[in-house]
Image (cartoon, rainbow, N blue to C red; front, side, top):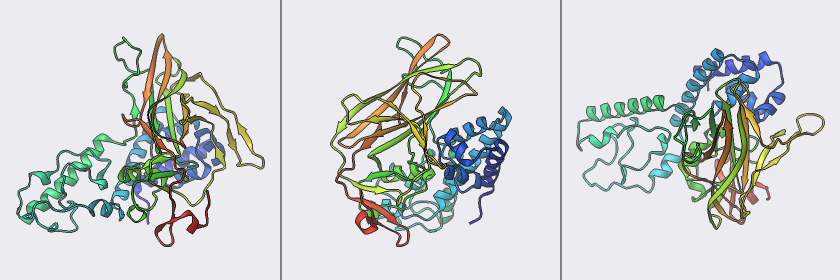
Length: 412
């Protein structure tokens, strides 16, 4: 399938940055905490990054100026929209899974759309239920709710077109769903102070896979009702559609960047707060790979959610891309960030004996101000559940179905 023009334009800019820098994919990947193969997919246009932060960090490493970074962000925005359009238009069994249990509560309603090719979905028992094929759009009330039953076909088609236009307009206004906090966030200032703009910007990625390919989700569905695993960049939409929960481990990447090139922001500590513990979920475990591994294990903060008071413990990374395995030393707090020297904090939160809901708190100071930034998953706690003893499945791409570990020949 030919690449979208926007995707190819974005990939060309990334290739130009990489060529200008001159370092290898492995060397740049280590600085960005991504694998060499993932960076190569960005340069070739095979994958569009889920969030701009990693691309902006690449631009800074390669010496891009402010104008180049703005152009790169604009190109990424268009490429990301193209990727989402392609993902929403690609055939997938997921909509069928959601629509299967639905029925038409009104006998007078038509049994199907007059035009099956129109994007108007069929009637559902609850009009307020989210449409999984448009999970990333926050469109106004559907024109369908204002149509009278028995309306002429031209009116229905016009309404369907209006719905698509409204949805695309909403997507353009909202942009990418990655939570980027340029404005103050709750609990970001010390008690008793009025809210003020943070002296830094931040963003998170909460649907990360180890090495860009290895992850496990717990899903309360039978294998036949679960869609094939997505590419890593589309994991957020896949997980949301299936109501999936991180199985065994959740990876969260926090990118922090100062607003000034000279006035540094000091990051003092990262705290873990568990707000709820329950028995591990009795759901099926679905693995997103058939075994994969990266040459680089980035340094990170390890969190054991099973402990009564979990701590974020710095852990060394490993680089096995060369002839010898090289240790990437962990760096403990405090960190300093400026507009030209951002920092990425990777948190690996593991759970074996609990279904844990948790969030993070980042302590900071700058210019006489101090504060604590609460980091959540879009306003909700992160969630990680143990997988021990749960049926585990991997996807057989040849037969196009989920199979058990024993069927695939894998163990553990």
